[in-house]
Length: 240
Image (cartoon, rainbow, N blue to C red):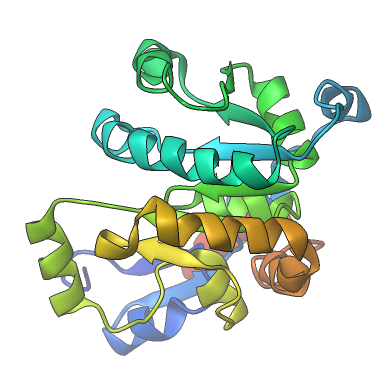
């Protein structure tokens, strides 16, 4: 990057030292998630009901949804044995909604599949726990104080290459930003229903275990300060 880039706007607070060490200037400007609108009381009320509400987020790409949907469905079957009244909501993109409906048709708990942004906000705020694919969605969940379990599987060659290159022991952004390891994650060969389900049940029973880490993550990403867009503009002007 340093050969062609002068100045970097970093979204994560631990990024600037790596950029400056390579010879670029860099400012942490905050993550856009801290300025995204949260659900209104009316949007949250749409999900009121009996039994725990489980938010399922198997990804936004066709390949990852296809890989994760069967695993998530079997996991929910295990959860249903403990919570027969559990409800499931699955926000997705309109472009892959038909695929998601097909892949979840045999789930033991039929999910409420939604594509409307307002309903998505309400689901994130109302959910008692989330089962999510690895990615920036963990920050959206933290912004809504929704405790989570992260699960992800991938091509075995990709997994092998990633592990050869990785210098970290977690891929979950909440864990990285908060410098904790409170969010359970199941990657690769550990992404199996028999391992995920106990963690999901434990997180549902003890949601407070993640609350401090999620709040710290939001603070470190710039919550309560100037908007990331304004900070980015100031950073560019100063660099110029």
